[in-house]
Length: 465
Image 1 (spheres, rainbow, N blue to C red):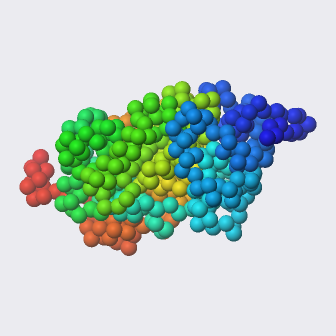
Image 2: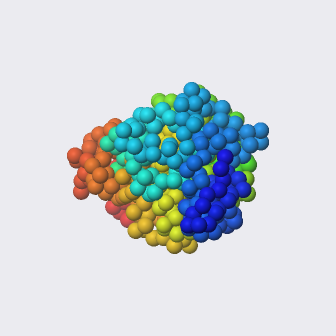
Image 3: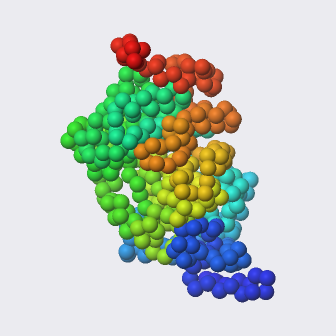
């Protein structure tokens, strides 16, 4: 493997493929924090030139964490379709990039190829892509999954309804739920991040979600984003109705241990959902990721945050998830410093997820101490829809008062659907029309009126205040 190149009369030599991968990455504050980033733009270009000549086979032979030491590596490697891998292994990363972007290469062909790719291959080709390349390449790939409904169908764009509350107050949660559904959010999932991570509290919220969903016959899926063991206890001990099992994941075994999970634990959760979960479809897992999580737990093994993020998607693929969501700007400026880095990372993560074959969404978000604002996040959301993203978040006023970060609001999904000529998941689209919240794909004046969901007794109580 040749690890040096000459650029403008200067010879750049790299000590390892790990160094090439790190320095070929676009500028990220997390890589600088780890002291593995390119020193300047010239060194970055040189690293990209070297990486372009590396073969896919060489990348497979040099995983970020050795096979013997890491179950994430073992799962990714063991899941590979060897026949498909052999068809592509002799391609260089540069040739693979050109193949993906070739107008004659269809999305179906790329999806087939994904079954023969390790995450290091996915990360490597991503590093050679410009932003428009990431959009164009991802747009070709259609990834669908089915829980109660099917996400990712052509012509659709979805949103997670995220009704978080600072105290898990049922009235506050349900007020956000009613408003969100009335504005067309929630076809991806009704999913809450709990303050109280106890099985009893999780079960209470799941039961209230299920009761509301059944009463109004809403075609969607529900989830409470607690630890996987907490959700399992809620199901087994309190008979909680759950459509999806959630867990945050990392791209290394050590990173997953920091989250308190193992691969076997996720298998157990998936088996429980298949036996006792309330979903009608086969895809019952929901994962969240984000560039920088491995570095924050000293679990990156000296590799760059993009490569470690790609490994999250290879790991997730094993469990056939309904949703995978990169919470792209949530960790903070230590890992993605400003809006330029967040936008780039969001496009990278979405592309890598789709190239890995998982149903990909993005929480286009930022923290209050990051150099970004709402316009930047709306820019990213718009670019993601252009790239064929399956879903974004729907948060009241785009301000999550519990998690203390800024995301996309209830109105963004409706506006983006109208701009791009897209609709919600078909059954949910029909439900919105039946309720009078939309007509011909556009919101009606009734949209946003949560009082539609109040019964007469509650209406009188509200009117008497």
